[in-house]
Length: 87
Image 1 (cartoon, helix red, strand yellow):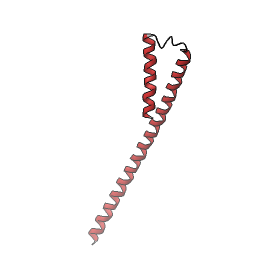
Image 2 (image 1 turned 60 degrees about the vertical axis):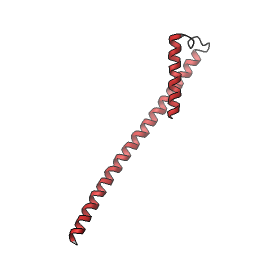
Image 3 (image 1 turned 90 degrees about the vertical axis):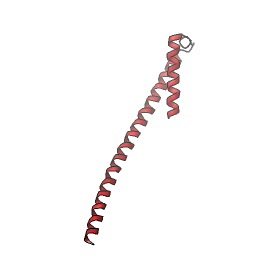
Image 4 (image 1 turned 120 degrees about the vertical axis):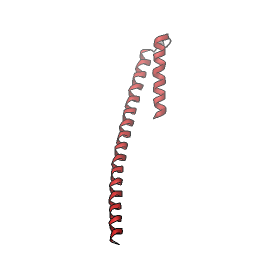
């Protein structure tokens, strides 16, 4: 009877300790996910601002129709749309 109580006590302590450690890890991962989400939203906002600025500068579509500059312009648009899909 005493052996059973000792074994159950040890098992309870081990399970409590492992649960506590898993909870700490889960909280850490949730914080990292929140930080990554904030970074992604900030990056998306900055890229949108860059795209809007470029579009204002290129109101006559002179840069957009240019080969090299137009390619970069389209890559920025694609990046913004891909980030919007992630969010």
